[in-house]
Image (cartoon, rainbow, N blue to C red):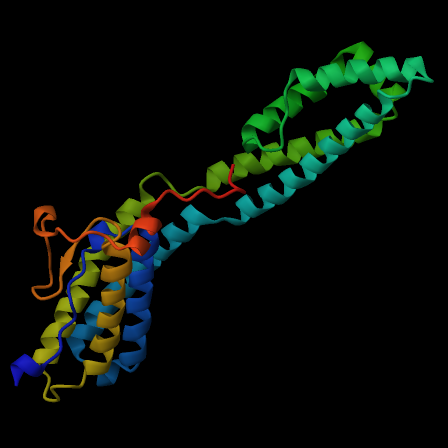
Amino acid sequence: MLHDIQQVKSVPVSDLKNTHFVGLMTFTRDQFASTFGNPDASPAKVTAQLQRFNNAYKTLDEAYKTSTYSLDTERLRQADDDCDRTFMGIKKMVQAQQAFDFNPTVKDAADRMMQAIARFDISPDEDYLGENSKLQQLLNDVRTVASLTDDAATLGLTEAFAQLADKVDLVRKLITQREAGKTPKGAMKVARQQMEPEYRWLIAILNAAALMDDDEHRFDPLITVLNANIDYLKKNVIRKGGIVWDDETDTELDEEDFDEEPTDEEAEDEKPQTDPTEE
């Protein structure tokens, strides 16, 4: 009987954040691939729409991966860490020689070098470009201001500053490469706009196929697992994102239709979380 035939539930895909949206599309793709792995044994309309869905998914996946991670970003992080270690090593060597009371020449050179370093207020916690720009200015002073050039030699830091200069140049190069390789502005938005209708059509065609297939329960396993994932999103993602869903009518409720107070656990989850390692 028709009322016994399962259907895939609705889900407000446009309201999902990119992470959850891509997760839903990936899950859907994988489940359809498992069910319709053999095109010859699958409904023609499902196979055709699944191909369009997969084509849109490739574009979405590429835009998402590029927007969240790139090899240039990882190289930049490693190069910046290396640069920070070299700079902090130089700073500690200067600070140590400030205590050379037994050698006024070295102590005076260390004091002047520390003043030059302090003038730029360089911190490894700064953003890549801000720190890199300050390091470049410091290195320029060490190269062009004769007294600082002599002080670097007196402190035995000429080679260390040369190594720092190479590392600063590498960081600047990687910053430029990363900026050039970023996803074009709006690429993820465009990919989602292409993906959403293909997802809706795929689900609509599956639901129609479930109604029309000779075997009324042929697609039940696929629909069951898709609905389980959708139920999870509605309970743990959409609800906490401020959207309330009526499971009986499978539609979004207006805010005034929902008066239930959040549980203590939900209220706790909504509090701003601070990562002590952030910044």
